[in-house]
Length: 326
Ligand code: 8YV
Image 1 (cartoon, rainbow, N blue to C red):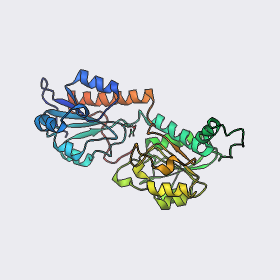
Image 2: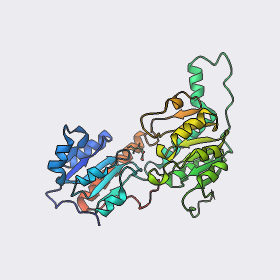
Image 3: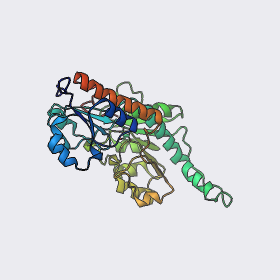
Image 4: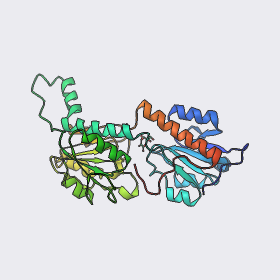
């Protein structure tokens, strides 16, 4: 049972842990006694003197709540994430302390899947590279090199959660042969299940990574997986940079051991390895899969509804599952 909010009339403080969508920041400030941690000149002093007043923390998927911050908030009862990922917070540790944790599932699924498919088409048809080609005035000198067909290709989905399934559904429209890898086969998925990432990579032309981040999936797309994908194979990552062994990816792209990669996430955002910036074989995006006006507004609304539910009833609306599922 999560820690209850403070008694009515002495509601307790909501701590905003990281920068959030301005509309969400404003709503929190208007509706609750909210303290914005990033704006404090001396956050350590605040936590020492007022940490006991905080009953709920609102944070981004990227920032989470660190163990040290959790320890500084003895009455914390809820951690509300703006985003579906929550690997930046130790959920087991939080729950052991009676702190419940929520995220914003479902509302971002379509936009993340749209972007994954767009990125796949971009890297296979070399659209961004072709755009640079036209802008650089190279069109007149020689025709743009031929690219690879998307329709009818074999696509492997690494992690068949909500987002993976939405990607698969979209690719059915392209006549793709879909296979997937997940911890256990998904009942009624209707696609071929492969037991390992390497087996999946061997069986596909493009590997789309949609699995949750965190310790359990770190480095899952290893050098061996990239080699199994092979020199005609493409990688798309809309999950977390940590899932891919980034140095191995840089080496594989550089040596032409894979055909290309479309990446929305990186190991150390916003830093992108120089070799990737210099490569025409990769599509590089600044972690924008959920970044549409509509989806970010829906994420903000869901995060706010979680805070409201906790502050009024002591429970969260969309608590995270015990095992991560994107
Ligand atoms: C956002 C994300 O970039 O939901 C996630 O896990 O990575 C993205 O939707 C993130 O939530 C912003 O903090």
